Figure 1 (cartoon, rainbow, N blue to C red):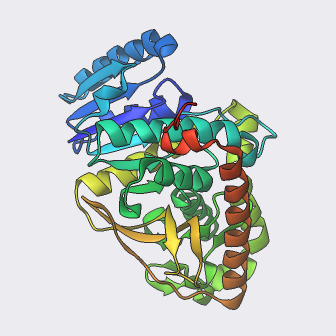
Figure 2: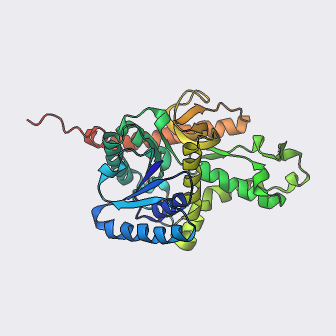
Figure 3: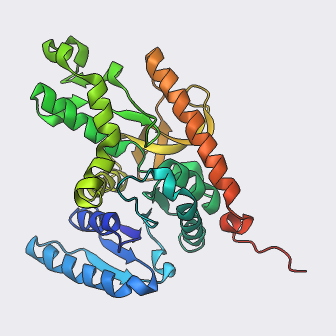
Length: 326
């Protein structure tokens, strides 16, 4: 199994690559960066090799600035783009990152037409839409990290409140990976029992938890300058489920065509079944009225912002076609 990471010189890209190198599902890992960052990712590859030797892992790791190296990849991860700094919203980097993501998506379609594209670049819902349109791939083959990391953050906070092992918590966040994310507390359960039936539920400060999940990324960035381990392991989680054909349900950003609440022509975080060929099925879900209203608000916001970003791009950004020169 071959996985390529575009943007491997960045904080999240290299952390994701290192996490993937440790997983038995990946045989070959290609680190892709711009020519000026080639020395850095060559050093990263050598450093990873040393770490893998300590763990008796025989994965092949290569560094390159040539996009042709993504050929025959099972999955290509797009982690390239301008990083978000403290105080910046994900939308602050939307337009410049859209141009970067579109360019890479076109090249992936050229050199690895049968691959799956996993988008990490922010704002991930909009970037997933851009990658889908620029690649021309089927929507089952292009999706983003979406709310998977948000769901893990919510899971952790609920586990800490009830002092119960995190593996017993079943919850998820849907909608936008941003201010309009929607925690599905109505269906959150612990050990198969709805959370509202637990005695400590009354003391669960839901508003505070939601606020903490929404601000988690910015809070970490304000402390250490970037998020790193959380996104890396969330990415690794998705990739391993796909390559192992585990058929698990995760919340990723995917293109909707009225599968949930008649929302269409927008990429949002929703539960999907993942397998070796990508998204096998979008899971239709029941929500409380409050959650449904919040989800529709998220859809409207992301769709509006996506339209604005797409209108800022030239036709050549998406198609690569320079047209007829007069």
